[in-house]
Image 1 (cartoon, rainbow, N blue to C red):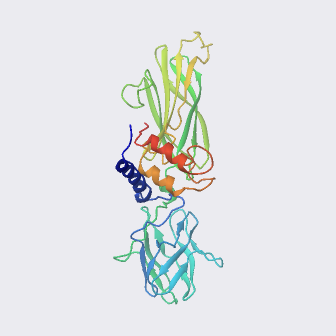
Image 2: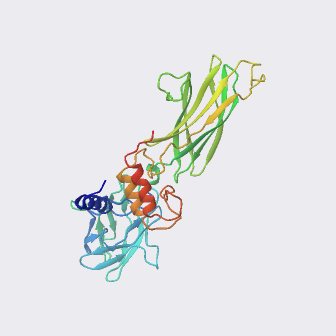
Image 3: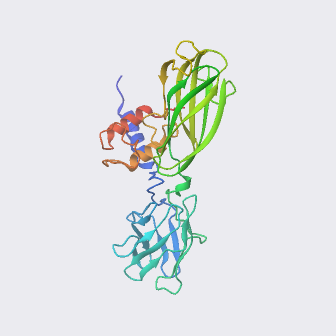
Length: 342
């Protein structure tokens, strides 16, 4: 079938529109300033723009870099080579000093970034040449997509290593939960035994169900055992689910429950696993923000890293694993567009 020229133009326009009108997100660990609004007010500096085209402001867990623009006094260097520059911490408490070539040091102590990424408070010293900066005035609204450490989602990797005892009535599984994120996180987790792999833990059709919580530091790996009560022999599925924010990771292992002295039981706990179906992180490869949807948010993340080479702060963004973000990754994402993974 031939495509008419006007249809080709329509398709091309659609692609260009997607490329240039989807908002680009940075990340909650290396944030940018939201394009609009983006102003604070200095009692001596006047209106200050933190999101101008050449400001290139970045907010991390330790500092703020880039420039702000004063309509009255020009550029303000947020990360000068001399001095500390503007500092930040995991709680969003700002400090340190920026540099204005016309007014000297600009103190940022007293300002904070709240849980929504909004700069708030009044920074600076009134008696200084630069004066104070008000981030909370009626028309002030400087916002970043950086988030306080305690508010970030840290993905969990979960694994059922082995059914160490398959003899009824007490089934024992060796499990592992790992913090793959950058912040300490308390994971709410649950484990269950079901007769059908499609049954969810806590869905009301569990043979056994229990839950717990465990706080893990970044990169910490927790290995333990969990017990489940099964009264009858047969084939079952042992499931483990760890929740973080709105997302979760799950692992499943199928096993045969036996009587003491039965096949695979060997008295004190044999291993009659029939097959393994471990699925930590059930996500599509194009689901860059791990929300189980392939949509404009994933595309925005892809655009942020466009034409950049690894290593990448988002470990999932290099879809085809060739160490560069380009049209191949974009093509793969388009082929997955609108998919959902649960």
